[in-house]
Length: 192
Figure 1 (cartoon, rainbow, N blue to C red):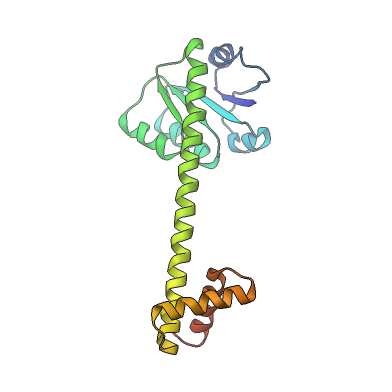
Figure 2 (tube, rainbow, N blue to C red):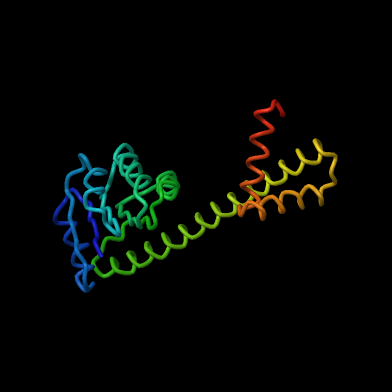
């Protein structure tokens, strides 16, 4: 496991390293420079990112939130103080754990475990949502193709669907592919 520790203070970063010292097969990379952080993250390709920001300014938080949005990784962010806006912004930026005033070596491992678990759960939800949206879009396309067949051929809905299904089976394609071809052809022919 490769863990990136982002902290401008090497002394504070050592607290995180100490908290993770018991992990086997763990490579820790400490980054103390903010400049070029996203490019550095791409180069490192960490499995987990731990950011210790101390008492960051609003601009600094926004900069780190931009990095969080770009990374598809579990991220735990440590800050000394926070407010409601910063917490909401961190969640929206994809931060898995936002820990206020909690930097202690003994707490690091459970926080990392929580960040990974929350990240995985959120990823599953996003994948499920994308799959559901894809199925809905396919269903809408099939319904549109059925309406076109019903209007142009004067077919009832079950017969229009049967024609779509038969064409899909005859051509060895999915019904949605046939529906897409019908809708595209209809639009090219000036249909609305």
